[in-house]
Image (cartoon, rainbow, N blue to C red; front, side):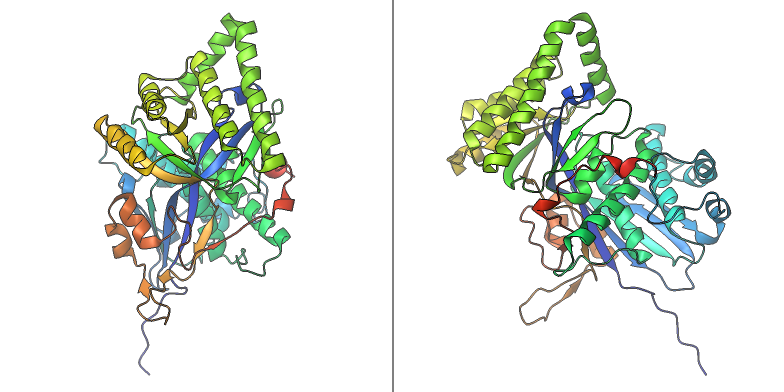
Length: 463
C-alpha cells in the first residue's frame, strides 16, 4: 500500500496580546505609591504553523526585528529540563529562573544572528532565550515541529510593554499546543477564564525574566488580562497587582517622540533628586500617589465618565513629572501642540526622557482641528497612533481563518506568506482584524468579569 504523505497535526492558528501605557503614577510607584497601567489596542500577533511529523524543527521568525532562526528539536537540551527535580508543569508558579536550565539554553540562544551588530544581536539572543526557556519548560521531545511568526504594531523600546506582549503570545501559543487552555468560549465560567488568564500571565512572566532579569510582573498582567490594573510595591516582594475590570475603553492618541531613553537613567535621576531634596521631592511623589488614588475613586463612583476631571488629573500628573526632571523637549513639544489646539490633555507615559506621550481628547474636539494637529506632529517627526485605552487582553484565532462574507464564502487563510508581507501597522491590522476597533471577526478573548477584581500579587510568588 502506498504511504500517504504526513500532514500537519493541528491547524494554523494565531494569538494576539496588547501593549500598555502607564496612565497615572510612574516614578512614584518606585517609592511604594499606587500606579495605574492600562492596555492599548496596539498589539503583537503570533502565527503558529504546525508542521508535519517528518519536520523535526522549530523556527522563530520575528520579522519586525529581523530575527529568523531554526533549531532541530532533537538537539535541544530536553534531558536537563525533564529531570524530576527540574521539571515544571503548566500549573507551576515560577518567580525566578533556574541557573542550570538557563546555562543549558544559552549555547542554543547564542546561535542566532551572528552576522548582526552586537547591540541588535543581544536583543535577538534575549528573545531566543525567552522562547527556548518556555518551549523546553512546556513542551517535550515529542512536541511537533512548528513555525512561530511574529508581527507587532507596538513600537519597540518605547516603554509600551512590547516584550511582555510577545511573551504573552508565546505563553498562550505553547499552552494551547499542549492543550492546557480551554476556550475562550461564550459559555466559559468566569472562574475558569480567570485561572487561564493567570496561567498565561505567569508563564509570560518567565519569558520576561529571560529578557529583563528583574521585571515587575505588571506588563504581562496587563497584556494577558487587558483593561487595566492598579499596582503597588510592598517592600521587597513582588508588587500587588489588582485588575480594574470596569476600566472604560477610551479613544487615545499615542505619540512616539522616537527619542531613545533609558528607564534606569530616569529612575536614578529621581532617586538622586529625592536624596538631595527629600522633603520637596517626597511631597511631589505623594501628590502623584494622591492623583492615582483620586482616579481610582472616580473609577469606582462614576466609571471615569467625567472627562474634564480625568483630563485635568492627567495634566496635573504630567506637571508633577516635569518637576521631577523626567520630561524631555520632545515630550514638551507634544504637550505644547495639544494645549495650543485645545483638544485634550497630555502627559508623558513611562520613564520619560523620551519615549511616548498620551493624549486624551475632549469629547467636543473638532475632527478638522485634530487632523491639523496630526499634520503638525508629522512635520515635527513624531509617530502617531490612534488607539484605545483599556483595550481587551489576550485573544486567539483558531483556525487562522477570517470569514469575509455573511454566506461563509470567500474565507481567507492567514498563511505565513500573507502575514510576513503585511506592510506596517495598517497592513497588519487590515489583515488580522483586531486593531483599533477590536471587533476582528473570529477573534475570541479571555475576559474577566467586573466582580472578579482581586489582588494578583501572589501570581509571581512560589507556592
